Length: 126
Ligand code: HEC
Image (cartoon, rainbow, N blue to C red; front, side, top):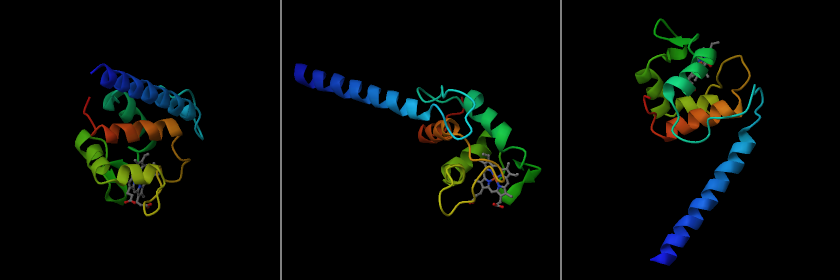
């Protein structure tokens, strides 16, 4: 029992340090304007995701102007492109997807990692 507990603590410590190094890597992206503070914990849709979408996406993707037939700007719409893989494919510039935001520099690593994390957390509406 004690051994299992020690192993669990060990794995936990290793994963913590892995996060730490990941985070350092994310500190400066291509067009990053500051440190990435979003790589730990539960990502907040309202505080961390919407502001990025507002700045880089909603102008071309909203209910009255859905470029490429992609609507964004509501939780349901934003979640839908998260679920079908198009959100991450497009911002990550994955082959087979149109690179987004269209005509602009790729989002910085911090934004991409934060959006990825929100998707991996099953896109909480928080
Ligand atoms: C300047 C306008 C513009 C901006 C800004 C923009 N998009 Fe797009 N988006 C388009 C157009 C136009 C298309 C249709 C495909 C094409 O023309 O490349 C599209 C297509 C898409 C698609 C479908 C891609 C595919 O391969 O099926 C997704 C998903 C998408 N955009 C998400 C986003 C996200 C997320 C952002 C913000 C990070 C964003 N877009 C910013 C214009 C824009």
